[in-house]
Image (cartoon, one colour):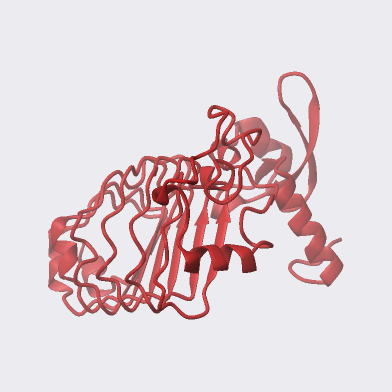
Length: 282
């Protein structure tokens, strides 16, 4: 516990399901990164970290991760400029964000149980909003009419096919809802500012990336690991019950090297090779 108190900025791959009470002593905390710590909840007193400028909490696909957040968590975090919440598949509600008046970068990724996102119309300094893998989210919050130039990226969300942004009921995310939202109702359409951003950001909004959120929660088997023998980017084959599928050995999100068949990973590696980037291809 003591080293967490004296150096609380970053924790990676260490179990910390609940914040220790001693952490309250860090009243001047400016930055906190919790990566793969299996954090389940954040206490009410975390709202007293008024000097926090960066908060990043990301879970692993094999853990429960965040289940709940205090409703008042962000009320006094006026200095927060960066907020990253990723891989919290059991989180059903986010706190209000009206107090984040200095927020510039917001990422919500792999939050599959969130049906509704908090209002963002009071956040005038936003520069980048990323909503990725929010598969249950039906509407994207409207933005402030006073916001400046902002990038809005939406991938793998029901809002991309239920009519809020695009009407495409044949999408795998909207197949259970054959009809799209009634756009005559104000709550089912973005405001003028948000719509203008959607129109300008067609390349980055609701794109088909090759990424499917469900793939993220497929844990590697012992056979997947043994097939690679620790060799990164080697070709491999994975048996899915009926056929051997070609794949690539990859350590997804700092985990063990295993045989992966996700096309996006292989496409990214091919791009690296073409650009001469990353580990040289032998």
